[in-house]
Image (cartoon, rainbow, N blue to C red; front, top):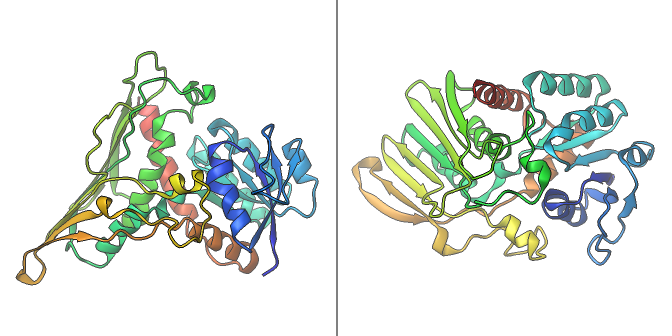
Length: 338
């Protein structure tokens, strides 16, 4: 496979730690240019140079893929511009603020014969991969209740001003809700109906910083919750089936490993400590069993490998268009209802 030259737009948390290390570690990619005002650590990103603007990337015929890691309210316009210039795009979630915008971007991608992928990296978190394995392996029987919580304790307003500005794509619903909704859709498909609400809890906040969502699937109920004012967070996942239950606390370790300078692919990268293993209680085959479940290794690389294969070989994306459109329909509807 010929190396895919990447132009990265933005070098904050997402660009610097959640994306750039993968372009450096995986042979399918080469991080060529970064649009940033920050210094690039050359000892880590040896060949990357600073670009002055997105236009610089678009005018470079050697760059095939643009990775967009900018504030939420810029995603739609930047993605549209890059696609129309004939570049493949990996855009941070949320891809857009509205379903209409998302549909337009996918239409442009098809017209340009380019790959558009949304960065739903948390489909490949260690804890979610473990839940997915148990559900698909029928360890719990038919699932009737699935709860996922993505709480944090951040009572102070974010020092990144754009995260506190009122806009159609600001707030925790589009930030963390995009992950929880995406995970649920990838497991269970499009719900038959849904409901939800957002609300504001922090002093001085003007955006939503908490939400509750319910997705309905025949006998299954999916409940998704998030707040920035939860000190003791409890289980992140609570899953109940006709034959068992699973409770999982903690959070995927990959972001922490990347911030420590670990390289994707290292032997301990993405490996969760035993203290965070989840609890399984099952009565399959009439036998009652309680056990700790070894957490799957977190593997965000899978998204990048699939993206490279899609660009070079036309392999279908794991992050499917219809799933993103369903996600945007849900998020936009709940946001507008408030």
